[in-house]
Length: 292
Image (cartoon, rainbow, N blue to C red):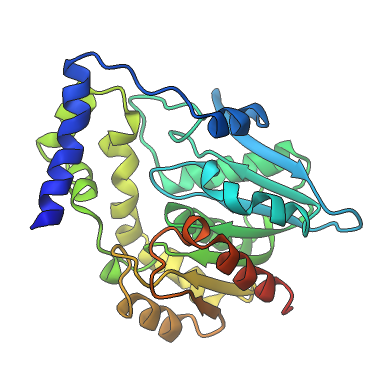
């Protein structure tokens, strides 16, 4: 019951802010620094923000980080510097509609388009023939599965994957429990058009939340890629996650994805393990990357 009132509050706050013409808050110093270190490239006429840091000398390894909903590449800020000490290049982007990237409206957002954004960035950076390591979270997990599918099917423009590490994504519709706010928006309820009309927060558009329905529609394609691939796989999981609850989610993952290794972090770690426990996340990832 308390959660229901929390979500009502989260819905009402932006509406009241718009009614009172309260401007959005200024960027923090940390976000300004993150933005200042980034660049943009153009994808089908839209600006896509990305970070690309040169790191370890003597290494040719490339890592690409895919963020979740409804956030941005800044989700990786706490593990960025340690990754640059291990990898030659560390790359992250803000998906179309997120963070510092363009937010077209109206627009039919899709996982397929976001995967194409990643492929276009890799081509833009001249890395099309480079084996890359993917690390993803939440929404980014589903984008990663589409990239995995394309790679295994030898699609034109595909990435050449060296490894894939997933974290706390709703891979299986049957174990995914979206929050009330997500459900209200994705199902075209009466609140969705109100939020869309009255706020400038494009992230609330129902179109961008259709990824939940896309996961159900394309389950066979994406879960099939996960269960059949020979790309090295790892799952880093925060067990206190209310969206992908323990133990149902991880039991199903281990049952279906038997080639994957798994790290379950401390019991107090929830949906954002890379932010809540960056040291544990990094230790798990480095153990995985050094295992093959």
